[in-house]
Every structure is written in structure tokens, then in C-alpha cells.
Image (spheres, rainbow, N blue to C red):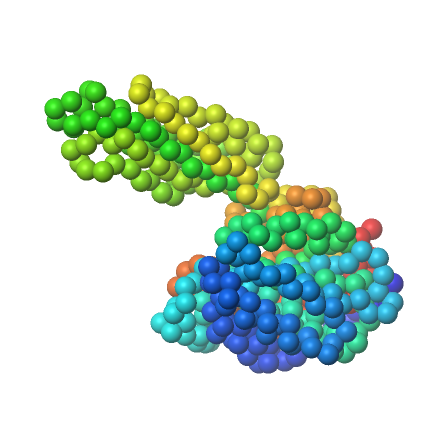
Length: 393
């Protein structure tokens, strides 16, 4: 394979931290809420323009069904061979237009604050910029590289999942620059899977004072299920449940004829997920006169620490040591698009983005001191032949 071997912990040629910081800020200052595909496409237009004139093929997939578009970048220099390395990130955020005006980008010491900077514009920018720089240099690579950006991750990747799975089908391994929540030098080697459910109870309305016994309370029905579901957090150590919404009733003097709850379930493995999904869908009404509807199912399968993931992580540990970087692994309860290729049996390394805190929170920030090391690590994963050989043995 073409490429380079890194024998000493010297820094490879990379843009200095301030230039990368400015690039991240530029992305953050282009607001891209998931529900605004026009703004997502504006950022993807910019990314595509940044690759103009470079030996990178660009493929745009348009927005559809109210979701943002997608961009696929492919770099296959002479000498690169075999299955591609896939990097994937998202450019959508949970923050509405106008958030930036109220909370502009600011830096306090090592912390760089901004809506969407941690989840995950910093990581998506660094991965994209790493590829752009390699292409601009005409750098030799052991394997071709495919970079994928979508705009609907925060809403479940319904429009992009099929494309993600197609791109990853022949991947040698997958790199996901989602943020690292832990100490600098940490990557993610497992994530819980997620299932979503909606329970709707149909009762019978009646006057609460004069004829309560003729009614059937939908609220009482779902209160029962809520307590049962939440109690599973005490008995199911490999899963978690959250009843996130509870709606029902019309007036305090009316036996409520309708009520609904929405439930989030997480599981660390498919055996647990399958068992608890089946149990949730099999729930039935507890009280006479009430009809219960249960809908939902799996959104993302668990990202398990498979032997393939463990091998990839071991290769990264060795690579990081040669770069003079610390390396540790962690598991997270939140999902990412990395769950999709992991469920396909692909080696996936997640959490390659900057360290920080505050995903979906007003204190969202990254640590500036982790920008250059993460860019360096991603570059080395794409260029180092010894690492790629160890990762794919």
C-alpha cells in the first residue's frame, strides 16, 4: 500500500491551531437547524466550493422530505487501493435560527463556546479540512477515502440512513468525528442502541362528579404504564427507559378519554434490545373500558464493542503512542450515525472529534487545546500504512 509510516512522535505537517479554530468558528456561525434544509444546503455549498479544483469527486444528494441534503467527497490518489476508509459527520444542529444572536461564539481560556460547536461542527470541520488538505497536497494514501456529510442526524437520519449504509457497505473501517465527552485523548468504542415508542390510551369520557364510574380514564391507564416502564431502570442493568412526554385529558371535571406517552429506550446489545422491544410492544390495557395502542421500534441498533472494533482501537492506541498522544476508550449512551455501520459488522471508531461538554446545552463548548491533536490523529489514520495494515488484519 502507498502511504507513510510514522516512526517518531513528531507532528506531521498540519495547519496551526488558530487557522483550524477560525474554520470551526466559520461553520458554527452558519446556523443549520435540522428543520432548515435550505441553511444546511448553504453550508454544504460552501464545503463543496472549498474542494473546487482539487482531485476529489463531489456528489450532492438533494434535500427531501423536509430533511437536509447530503454531500459525498471521494479522494483516491494514485497508489491508493483496496476498500475505502469512510469518514462521516453531520452538519445539522438542534439550535433554532437566532440562537447565535443571543449566544455568539466566544472563547474563555481553553473553552470555545458556540451553538453546535461540540455536536458536532468542530469534528465535522476537522475531518473535512483534513481531507481537503491531503487532496491539496496530492498526498499519497494507502486506501481511498470517502467523506460523508448529512443534515438530518439530530432527527434520526431517516433520510440519510440508506445512503450511509450503502457507503459503508465496502468500508475498510469507519471514522466518526463526533465529540469526545471525556478527557482529551478519549475515543468511543461502544454506544447504546435506541428505540422509540408511543403509547396511546383510548378511554371513555364521563362527568367526574356525577357519573365517574361510567367513564374509563386514559390518564390512569398510562400513569400505570409510566410507573411500570420507569421501574425497569431498577431491574434492567443493560437498558434504560425514559417516559419523556405525558399528554392527556381535557378538563379537571372530565374523566379523560385520551392520553399518550412517548418513551425512549436504550440498550447496550441487540439481545437486550430485542427482548425489551417485544415486551413493550406487547403491553395491553390494565383497566376495563380502555383500549391501548403501542407503536414504535428500533431507531438505531446498538454499537457494540465487537472484535473488529477492538482491533481498530488497538491499532489506534499504537498510532497515538507514536504520535505522542494519550489514548483511552469509553462507551456512551447516546447514539450516532456510527451505530449504523457498527450494526453491519464494520470496524467503527467514534468520538474522534474535539473534547468538550454541553451537547444540546447552553454551555456547549470544545477545548481548543484538543483541535490540533485530533486533526493530527485523523490525518495519521488516513495516511499511515502501518496503522491501516494493523487495523485491517
